[in-house]
Amino acid sequence: MKQLALSASVGDGGVNKQEDIRAIQQALNCLKNHIGLSELLSVDGSLGQVPSNSNTVKAICSFQRKIMGFSRPDGRVDCWESTHKAINELLQGSDNKAEWFFPSKVEPQVGLAESDYQHAAELLSCDIAAIKAVSDVESAGKGFLPDGLPCILFEAHQFSKFTDHQYDSSQPAISSRKWNRSLYKGGEAEYPRLKQAIQLDRTAALKSASWGRYQIMGFNHKSAGYLDVESYVQAMFESERNHLIAFVYFIKSDRHLLSAIQNHQWEAFARHYNGPSYQTNHYDEKLRQAYEKHSIA
Image 1 (tube, rainbow, N blue to C red):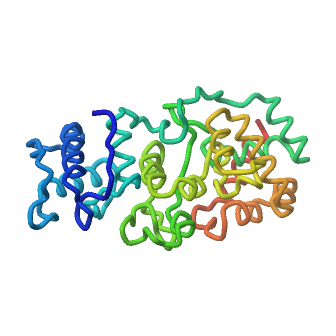
Image 2: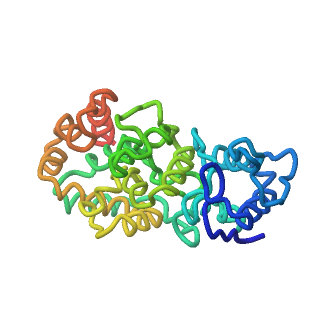
Image 3: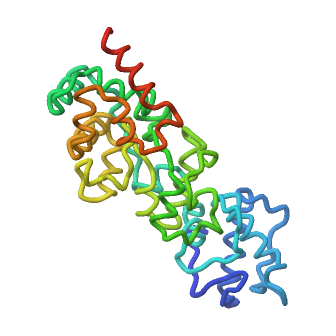
């Protein structure tokens, strides 16, 4: 089975047409190893007298919990909404992280040459050590993860804002009205969080992550030189040189940041680049130390 076709919703509170229920049962049986079904579902097109107690709805909940990461599954599959799409993705074998973004995974150009730093420093009228300091502190000097995906950090409070807080109750791990450090997973573990958010609202999800070597937020795509967030994210998948170019555009778009990096005013830079919580991580002091290291190198 390669494609699940539905005419109406199935599950707890769904329309529950017999042919649609049967299609869901067949699809979930195909995915039994992914969701841990100990016994195959009966393909009978029925959810019984109390749908929420049926094995089919329980299997839908298991799929939402294990595959989609829902902390509070609703046990329903709506036509071409997130659960329906996720079932079809898995049926088609398209559960690779990168395929949730683009048709094929891009082979990135990793690393920056000294000439790249020199050119960026000339455009910003600052010294190379200042740019390298930001690079060190933002991403430990690396724009890509070992698997070739760009470094990201998904911000649940931004996703909450961009989706009008509608997922705060049902998806608290990825949608939070307030910033919550404990929600971060770090490294490659950020991608399942982003993937889950994309299933709910792709544009809001991409805007809610910081990307690449300089961790510029998706919602800042225009300041980074891109008309839309899709173009920005595509560029972040391609090369660290694109990361650096976006950084140059972003710094030049803000006179406070530009002045701060030119004059090595790290407290001011930290405040405008990372927001008022910068002191929590001693971001300004880390920048100062990194700058001093590169200045004497």
